[in-house]
Length: 155
Image (cartoon, rainbow, N blue to C red; front, side):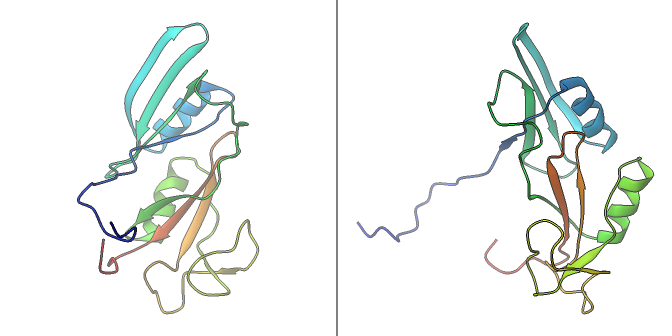
């Protein structure tokens, strides 16, 4: 069998686990974003699972108590695709979230890590995949809004 052969098995990213220090604070933050609360299960004093889903997303986040050994705030580069970067940023700001100004990367399409290489404003040509804004949750887990109006073929 050729190792490069495509199979018929679908593999969808369903859940991302976020390490947080205060479950209730994180739950309130993500609800403030307008995310749907899917579950909040407590099975013991040491185990709690909270699941929320961004509007329009098939993937969810999970955080809680006793579900990860990762340090709170250690997850970075979580992308939320939006149709209109400026409108999405404005909506989050209206909800009280501290969001960076819209930016594009000095080197082209994909942004450098952290804030290095950021150029103020959306991509000058308004290319898909090239305009961003960023924010963090209360623990510092980092999110990036990315504007995509028309997806590239193959998705």
